[in-house]
Image 1: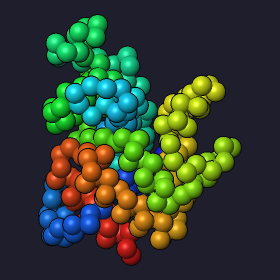
Image 2: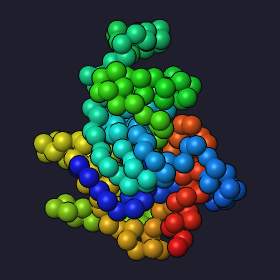
Image 3: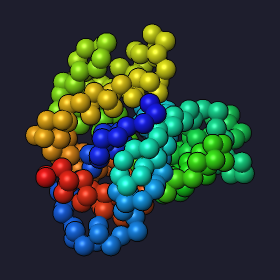
Length: 238
């Protein structure tokens, strides 16, 4: 996936359509320096798998850097975590006990401190790719499945309908020889197509907000989420 020009498609690319049901001040959105819908920004999306047990939220199985220009996607870069390591950070004792000598992007969310883990992930990505990011979005399969169910089933070209269990779909595709990044992007595209229907768009926004409140979507810094969700809600309702 190289370029996409649909305004607000970031909502789909991030799997999040994250507007708020809390509806904080619109003025906070307008004045904020964290307004990702204005200017150039790089957002790091971390796809976490909680089935790999650890003190933190889960393993990072796939990542993307989404480059934005005034809210439009300028580029999406696939990031494969398993070979990317931090240049200086030392893994904690509990991770070393697993036979790990370098702190890999795959294990960046190992500990409970999600803000520290997000910062670690950003540093690893920047060191290995040269891409500096100013916001991190962490998604779990539960969040993705809840949003698919809110608008689904979705139709994935060449594969048919998907109603949930996105992680199993990705694993099945990988077993069949499909690149993990390509499989995830196929889900993104199907979600984007489904939300051309305004009622489905708003349904997914509500599902995403619920998932955020349940901790299945995490945004660092949190203030960026508030401003993004206000923008998404305003534009989605018009």
